[in-house]
Image (tube, rainbow, N blue to C red; front, side, top):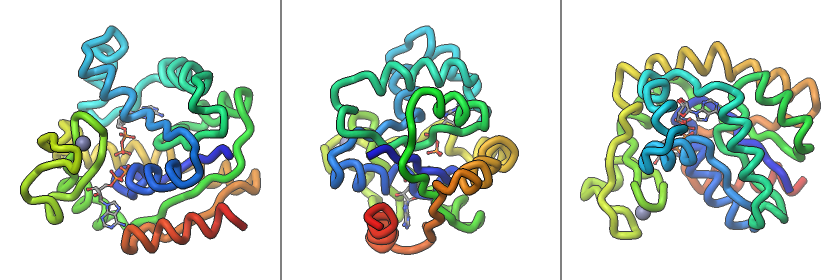
Length: 205
Ligand code: ADP
Ligand code: ADP
Ligand code: ZN
């Protein structure tokens, strides 16, 4: 099975992707997590992307496509994969079409006021990539034991720009996939387990 999770920053893509990927035994491919790993390791790609990411801009399509093409060749993608945060532009979606067919596109819908409180409270694990909310994890510890941190691009000034970039570059994908008959919109403004159940229902139909 091959899935895409679409939605604005903070919609809950990563949170839901972990659950669905585990349940269906498919690879969770987060281009954001991949870029953060490159930045942490200080690779050439990571260093080139850092400034764009910290300003809330998108990383160029060719860089992302190169990363994704390599990633889906790996062994754990044999049963399928779930893209979280990819594609983010029409050009990426068109390039993906030439690489692989997709079964379902899940579009997580969350009102913008809620996105801002989710993102500003998001805390990440540097080691396993898990996302938490500060309201539920005030001790700032991941279940794996590591100390959580706030992403540089989750600070207020950058978040506003990310939402503008989403509206301009990524939102058009909703219509793009609706026209292909692949889009399923799911209410993301509900408890994590409720959203998970709705996504499973949609996929299993
Ligand atoms: P995305 O990958 O779409 O940017 P995340 O999965 O990282 O979003 O979630 C953003 C923030 O919102 C995190 O702090 C996460 O813990 C929290 N969150 C995710 N889903 C829900 C939900 N259904 N209800 C409340 N908070 C949520
Ligand atoms: P979020 O979970 O909040 O939606 P991500 O972790 O997916 O954010 O992405 C963080 C940043 O990494 C983006 O703001 C962008 O700069 C870059 N990025 C991630 N995926 C892509 C992509 N497919 N195309 C371009 N830039 C990307
Ligand atoms: Zn962890």
